[in-house]
Image 1 (cartoon, rainbow, N blue to C red):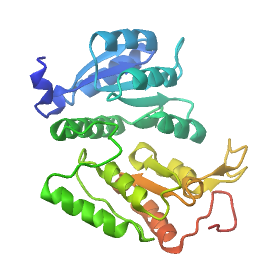
Image 2 (cartoon, rainbow, N blue to C red):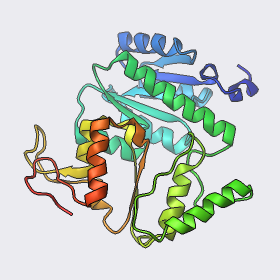
Image 3 (cartoon, rainbow, N blue to C red):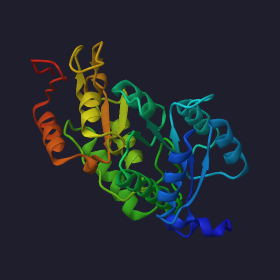
Length: 279
């Protein structure tokens, strides 16, 4: 594959590496991803994967977490240090809310539990691939710079809107195709808002199923479910006096979008396992 062909804009221009110490899973996932038209290969360990990426960078890594030697999380940490634009999808047969949240916060693009559905793998790789291709077309880096340079008249209009809505205390919906800089706009709004001294807390809603989203956004109380051995403060409360940026909200189910709408309207949440609402 030539260097120029990688920027032509189809899933065939993407390289995907599957990392798992189980041969059957490696083979099955590789065949499934190849069916999308992507170039796919497999590695039986994180160490082998790093050596492969060193020789030939990849766009997406799909890795098991629990493997002999280096774990999938350690592999992701190393990838993020050395190849910032590579997206990492983590798989595990021992999924917990705490582990999923930790992985997403560390930079995982998606978190899936075994046994996984083939359609879910296809959707995940397709969405990530489309995001990567959109960034290439717009020349937008994965980790955007802090500010926005507006030369185009339409972009100047966007900044005018940012300056108008930032001082308000209302929810803001940012619409745009993948790779067009929605998080840049969110950060610009936060910097100009009344809450600029607080933290901007981003969350990729497409990376977690509804059950984990509810726990991460609203929090939970000890004993709320099996494995909840302590209280967990949700993002809305952690971002108090700051800003929450929810990316890919359209990926939420309609039921969960209804719960989110109620929170935005009433400014109150109910952590899982709690009988009372909190502000």
